[in-house]
Length: 306
Image (cartoon, rainbow, N blue to C red; front, side):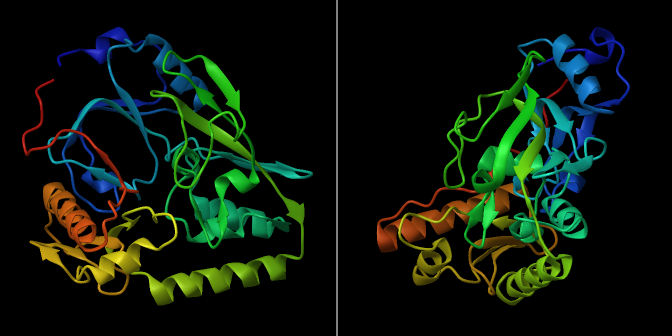
């Protein structure tokens, strides 16, 4: 697809970059280039961009890139990077408002400092609020849908929306968010509590994560969603996939629902290793695992001309 957005869209205050590398914006550190990368200055700037961007050009939000695998062929259209500027936090009685680019851990720590409980579970989720809304992120028995009051953002054409958890049918690691919608903020329910108690619970969660999951490595969080009635890691382990490798892509020895880039893995190495695990699990247990990591872009090593 060939298009010249820099000539079509006026009045932007953020940064619009052509042929932008994406690997460094993801935790796995792999993948090709985006045709365009837009970093909006704020929500109004994003709305202005969406109003003017032709509807036939795909747009895709990117937060921390924690649960995202960008394929080697790059991403068609515009990747919108929210984490840099759309990251404000505020609160009032019973509510905490977080913009979509805030990291989940940052929101949990802000709440703790303000003496607000209910969001401690977010401290170990490796992502942003926007991504958490799209996938109904969660851990330690709690999910976004349990604390979300409302979320706001823009439809593909820049029309604003405000929705509730019921509107997008939030369920285990899934929602029915329409194609092209981009979240800009969420409001969560909180209650007052002693800050020391909140911080204590968060420390326990962080310690539990360090004991059971790989940290300090290039990974993307949980690779597959847990099937009904079982844990993904258990059936992966039972299929003999713990420590499995493909080049520099590997399945973690510590927690076998984690893909790791040990240095020079390609996106294809990681994705094909994941598919190998899915095949092995299906052969062994009859269960077809569902990817939790979002895989985006073109397969192959050649980026399209723009």
